[in-house]
Image (cartoon, rainbow, N blue to C red):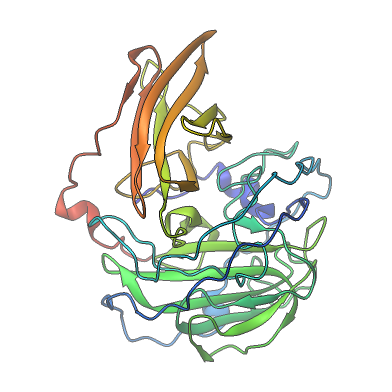
Length: 360
């Protein structure tokens, strides 16, 4: 599994400094999860709050930012109920988490501020997704597990009211994936309703949405981490949150013609039946963690199943590719610049590539 490069040390500091968007309409109610992912091997060890802290020692945080402009609310945001978790149609899929915000509010990621995005003048990379909801909206545990952090200081590793995450919670889940532990993070909270060491169940209220930490408005910053509770081990939450029933997820790996990763590339995805368009941008840093199987640098979740066209303007030339979004599944493509597209899945990984990364 890729780890964030050393050059990303400073950029990761303010991963949770996020902008507020106009609130869209609420979706329909989703079912409560009734299943639990298979347990993964986990070492029996005592993890105190400080031991599960996210931040390095002696970090510093820049204080000047340029925040993204909130986009207008879409015309219609009706959504069906979510698949029950765990949901995975393929051996490398892992829709293990329910939404951390209830169905009576917006519970999907802010479209213009996704994982891996860069929107600040200091090149800060976003290591989670933001869910824009009003202050004091209940925050729900995305799955069962143990609270290993609750309070200020998640980045710094000790109680610090100036921590960029503000009041935050980390849950170490009682299941994993391919032998590695899984964690979820809930940041910028107004109020925390759990304590370190507490066991929680999926859907249990653990806090309230707020504006603590470095943020411009009320929203929930949500992360998925693997192996250990660190921003160095974050993965794209849109590959872990269960999609709406009948909807799917588009995943892509984009490179230049010479084979290097294509960063901050705009990609337009258009529904062929309705004409509706989505614009998504590839990750802003080559050091951002990708899924160990898909090795992606672009994810667009919550797409209604159907036929789509992918549109990429590259070196003053337009490239297009038709693709079908399958319900409850990942649809995958690669782009290689002037070598164009493929829609084949990645080759099966060697067994050693799926084993847990040794912890330091």
